[in-house]
Image (cartoon, rainbow, N blue to C red; front, side, top):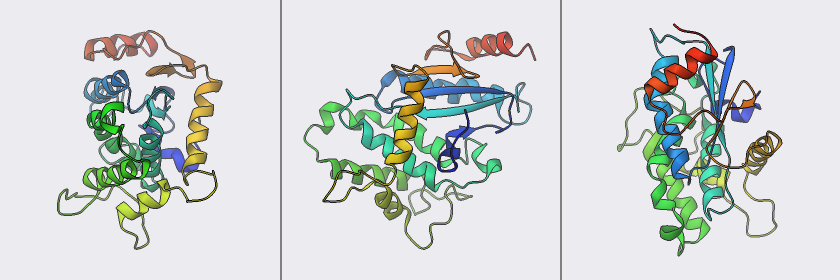
Length: 234
C-alpha cells in the first residue's frame, strides 16, 4: 500500500495511520463520482479534522484506474496524475483534503465529468481535451484572478505557469509512442489495480483486502457502521 514519491498526494490522512481505505476510481465512471463525493461528504468528517472520532486512524488512498471503454478516460487520469506530481510534497499538507491539490482536483474532475463523456468528446482531438483539462486545473487549484487561495496547493514551479506545467506533463511528442511524462505513474496505478484483482470501478479495499461491502451509496450512518465494525465504536 506504499506509494512512490511522485504519487504521495494520492493519500490523505496520516500516512502512519493503522488502517488504509483504498478506492479505485475512473474519472468517467458515474458510480466512481458518487463514491468520491460520498466519501468527501460523509466519511471525511468522521476521520479528519479536530474532534473527528476516528482521526488519525484511517488513511484514504484514491487510486486512479482508467477503464478502457471510456474513450477519453486516459487523458483525464493523466491530468490528475500531473496534479499529483505538482502537489506540495509535505505529509502535513497532503494529509489535509482541503490542501491536497490532487484531492481537490479529483473532486472537481468528478463534478465536471459529463463534459468529457463519450458523446461530448466524440468530435474532439486528444490535444483539445488536454487543453481543456489544463484550463480546469488552473481554474480549480490555480491562484489567478478566478480563484484566489489563501495557501498554495502546488509546489515550486520554478517560474513555469501552472497551466504550462500541466501541459508539459501530459503532452505527447509528434513522433514515437512513449506517451506523456506521467505514463510511468499511470502504468503503476493500472498494474497495482490488476495485481490486486480490481476489475471494475469503484472498488474499495480495506487494509489490502478487497471490501465488497462498501457501496457508492454509503451515507454517514453506513460509514459509521462500517468503521465501528472494523475499528470499534468511538
